[in-house]
Amino acid sequence: MSSPSGEIQANPAFCDMLGYTAGDLRRLNLRDITHPEDWAETARIMNELLAGRVPSARSVGRFLRKDGKSIWADVSTVLRRDDKGRPLHFFTTIYDITDRIEAEEALMASERRFHVLFEAMKEIVVLHEEVRDAAGRMVDYRIVDCNRAFEEIAGMSRDRVRNRLASDFYGSDPPPYLDRYAEVLERERPAFFEAFSAPMGRHFSVSAFVFSPGRFATVSTDITERKKMENRLREDEAKYRTLFESADDAIQLMRGDVFIDCNERSLRMFGCSGKEEFIGRPPWEFSPPVQPDGRASKDKARDLIAAAKAGAPQRFTWRHCRLDGSPLEAEVSLNSLTLGNEVYLQAIVRDIGDRKTHEEEIQRALKEKETLIREVYHRTKNNMNVIGAMLSLRARALGDPRIADIFHEIVDRIWGMALVHKKLYESGDLHRIDLREYISDLAGQLTGSHKATGIPVSVKLDLEEIPVPIDAAIPCGMILNELFSNVFKHAFPGGGAGEVRIRLARAGDGAVELDFRDNGIGLPPGFDFRNQTSLGFQTLVMLVEHQLLGEIAFGADRGCACRIRFPLPRGHEGGHE
Image 1: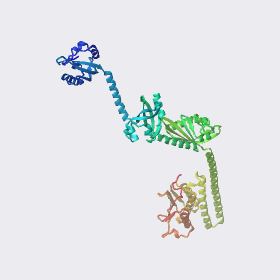
Image 2: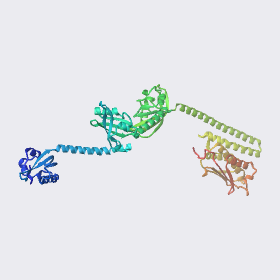
Image 3: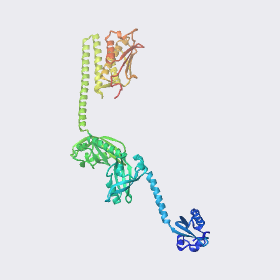
Image 4: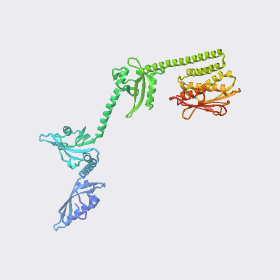
């Protein structure tokens, strides 16, 4: 009880409720034990009762306990008056409803959290309730609610979906997954499965669970892109598996240093009847103890595997052994690939036994051909030397100096050509010779052959190393022979010492330039080499323009100068190969 001015009297239950004694409460005012936020409402109710506008009042408010905590209470109040209608006291019945209020608040908070989560989820959430027939069997289910994700993916508002039977919405009777959902409701255990929604045209991963009696929820995640990727992966796997199995080379996959997969070609190559004879074994078990280079197969294989794992692709030849022990010569490519977090090795093995046999046969044939060609060059050189010697003997026997000179010129030409064959025979390359070395030797040979003239001629050489084929070397030798012959015949009519300078160089366009110069009496005024009737000049022009397809020019500055320029045959422009 409380007086209109606020004094309090209470029974023991109220004292226990607030943790006060009766004496404590007598020293307090009603306002002291009312929650500050609720005092205005309490005062309003008291004024209403005092004014006689209401006979009684009921409200929910909070009281303050002695320990400072508050409790919720259901409060019913009436005003007692005396015989003359004057207010005596308020009589109030109070029920502690703190547990109920807190439970309601927790429920409301949970509801708010659920609603926020419900709307914010990217997954489709749909709430359903079962529909049963008269016999109590579940024959359909009704869509109770759906979230915003459903609206976005389905392209329709929830108002069009709520309270619709699933059979109507999905257009099938019975509706999809009816038996599965009935089992979920009966056992009250979640179910997980994948499904295709025809109305949405998309694939979903679905989880279904009971959230209240007769009601269940489905949470669906759109996995359409994942399904498409899985299909592409299956197609790619089938395609690459076909390539893997149909490849002409053996293809193997290794984890660590053992085989974990191989194609059919691997089994045929190594003589295995099935993969169980191949998989799980290291490569050195299909190898002899020692490789041709003398290294142990096991040690060498481990080094190659370690290098490939470190990211350096390996390509090498390897001697294997088939399952029956027969040898197998192979070329191996070893590469690493990372799948997940693990490094694997892919080995591609090609049987090169037939190729090596063919290569050895080709090498033998080439060696035989090279030997034959060298022998031809050697015999040609010898035969030419014999012919030259016979002509020299014949010239001395004739006793006619004029005829002897003619024979001598012929012998020089023959020895010039023989020198080409000698150089080819001695060279490591049977198709071309070094023009620098050839000119140097030929100049010495021609100078020595003309010692009988009594004219001392020194030769100065400035030669660049230029490899040329035999078709260019022989004309160059004959050209030099004609030029040297002209020097000893005409350059120094009065005798005395002479000098010849020969320069050989490659021009900027790749052509060859050969300059021949002497310090003799030079050419007569108005000299035109094309109008000369001598066999020597005619031979020079023919050799340069028709055999070398080059150009020739003469000058008469302090002697006779001849410049020859000719292109190298195709395939020899680059010099060394």
